[in-house]
Every structure is written in C-alpha cells, then in structure tokens.
Amino acid sequence: MVRIAAVYPRSEGKRFDMDYYIHTHLPMVRRTFGPWGLRKIEVDKGIAKPGGGSSPFFAIGYLYFDSLEAFQECYAEAGMEVVGNIHSYTDVIPMIQVGVVESLD
Image 1: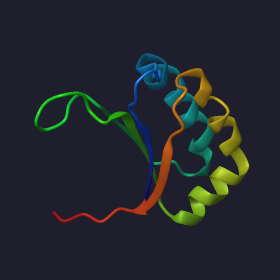
Image 2: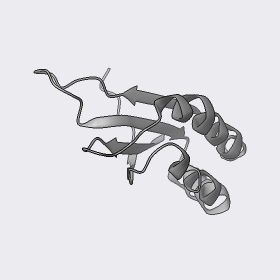
Image 3: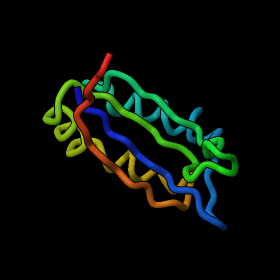
C-alpha cells in the first residue's frame, strides 16, 4: 500500500480553513479519486508540539492507494481538479510525499 502525505507547514500570515478542508475539499477528493482506487483518507490536525507551543503544521492529509501505479494513473487523470481546489482553503504550498506504508505491529 502507498500513502500520499500532503503536509501544510504553519507559518506567520498564512491561512488554512480546516472546516473547508475537512467538509468540502476531502469529500471532493474522495469522489474524484475513488474510481481509481483511493482506499482511505486520514488527517492529522496540528494542535501542538510535544513540549508545548503551536504545531509546526496546520494539517497533514493522507491518501491511501493499493499501489504506486494506481495513484499515478489517478493523478494523471484527475489530479488537476484536486490541485486546483487547494487555493479555496489555504495559501500554503503543500509538501507532498509518496511513500510505502510499513507496519511494525
């Protein structure tokens, strides 16, 4: 399984509308990417650093696909619709990582 992480760094003067992200953007991602095998969506809402203070990230969103090929096909076909909606909830440029999920259970 591969996981796509979209990391939204927190910085002074930047905006991030969590309500829009959770209730509008991510349902649109599910509808758009679902036909290409999107398995699950998860979100970390940044609340704090371990020692106190603000989290370094507004949020980290995770998308799960069975394979890299499934994600790449999905992104090639429908990715621009999702990317085009980012400005609706933030002016942060997300950092994106595609990784293989390794479980240590």
